[in-house]
Image (tube, rainbow, N blue to C red; front, top):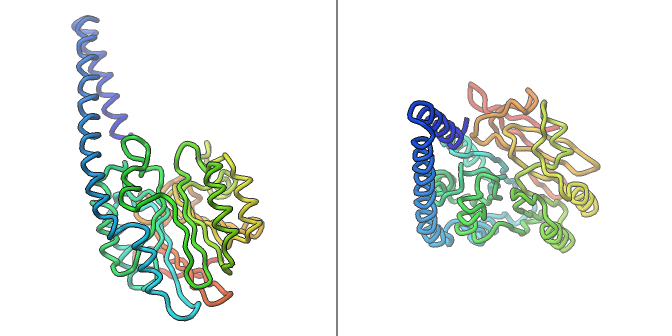
Length: 322
């Protein structure tokens, strides 16, 4: 049970107990006091959020997209041979996340991509507790993230994420690779505006390899690796988005949201779930995909080698992905 659900349940139990023992009038008083308490707590959160946003904006020069992209460009070798790391769903499980980030740093990639769910509720303070320490840990390797549903914040507007990163989308090229990230974690999923952004980014590039990052998998891909219902993948524009990826020869789409690992080649486009960055693993993922991990993509001209680095009880196991 989530904390909010526990609080509401305890409030209802207290209300029922008072109403039963003291009468409905006393129960009504308890109910009003309970609502006032919730309103005070929410008001404090909103006040703290406003102050925290200003703090995050002040850190944008260090952690923002523009800075990270510039750092990645400076780290690029003179050839098209380089490698990058992808991982996701670290949440606030810092012990495991620190181990994964530390291991990824040892691989010395040009850049690390995070597929979302960096924090728990999207409050400004959480970014300072759960994201910036990981970015500092792998310094000077840059880290670029797409927002997950847990980054939504108090007003569900991703204000904290945007304040720290300077936006919620990115597009840039390294060598012969294009990287595009969007936010598909709102209630609208992949919007028409997202479709236009993807179309423009993908059609405007002559890159050999094209990579897309967003948090929530499409429903048709989720159905290939989960073992229960109901599904949690996005529906709106999933078919149109897939056709767009086919048309522009997207190499791979990276996602998270459901904690584990899965990958499928669908109509020439590879969809890969990498959500084992630290969060508790999901029983919804088929058994063979329940492990903490990160991914490496080794680019060498027209060739790409796909490596899975899996956390085991004895350390790390490196596997060639199929």
